[in-house]
Structures are given as C-alpha cells and as structure tokens.
Image 1 (cartoon, protein in one colour):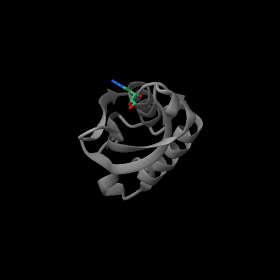
Image 2 (cartoon, protein in one colour):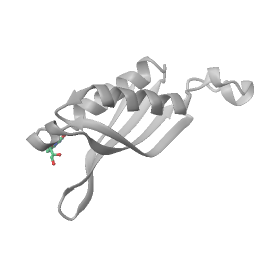
Image 3 (cartoon, helix red, strand yellow):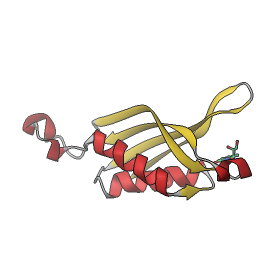
Amino acid sequence: MDTIFIREFRVAAWVGIYEWEIQRAQTLELDIEIGIPGAKVGQSDDIGDTVHYGQVVERITKELADKRFNLLEALAEHLCAIITGEFRAPWVKLSVAKLGHIRDVRKVGVTIERSR
Ligand SMILES: Nc1nc2c(c(=O)[nH]1)N=C([C@H](O)[C@@H](O)CO)CN2
C-alpha cells in the first residue's frame, strides 16, 4: 500500500497517570504512517483523492489540546480512529513517545496499527 508519512511531529498533550502529568501538558513525539486510499491520486494529481497531511497535523494538534488521557495506548487508539474515520484512510500505523521520562532513555512509547 502507498503511504503518507508524518515524522517527528512534536505536539502538546495532556496524558499520564502521575499528578505532575495531570497538572500540565507535555510534549509528545508522533510518527504516523497513513495508507493512501486507492492509487488514483498519482494520475489525478488531485488533493481530494488522498489524505491531506497538513489537515491531519492540524486536527491532531487540536484534538490533543482538548482531550485528556491516562495512557499513551488510549491516546494512540483515539488518534487512529480519527485518521481512519474522518480522513477515510484504509490503514494507519502510529507511534507516540514521551521524551526524557526515564533516566538513560530518550523516548518511551507505543506503536499501534489499525485498519478501517
Ligand atoms: N504502557 C504504558 N506504561 C506507562 C504509561 C503509558 O501510557 N503506557 N504511562 C506512564 C506514566 O504516565 C509515565 O509516562 C510517567 O513518566 C507509566 N507507564
């Protein structure tokens, strides 16, 4: 399947199980791979035949400003549902990482893959 990628996307989010995470937003890093619906866009050259990656970034930024999650797993599931539902993507793989949370570890997080 052809895909669109969004890598090293840094975004503020409310997520975590500890008091300090509940009190303030933190920066997450997302890597997203999105299946392109059909092979038409290479011929049509029409933004309407693909997923507009700028709109995905904008939508996720807004969603994470508004919602709160305990776990990265739930946050990832929610974002995948937006990408397959609202953006009609047939498939998505999404990684979300917290930065500098554990000593000697640069990033920790989860990766999930979902199909419509
Ligand atoms: N599998 C997970 N483990 C942990 C998560 C998570 O979201 N998924 N979250 C935390 C805390 O919020 C932690 O990130 C604070 O540093 C711990 N483990």
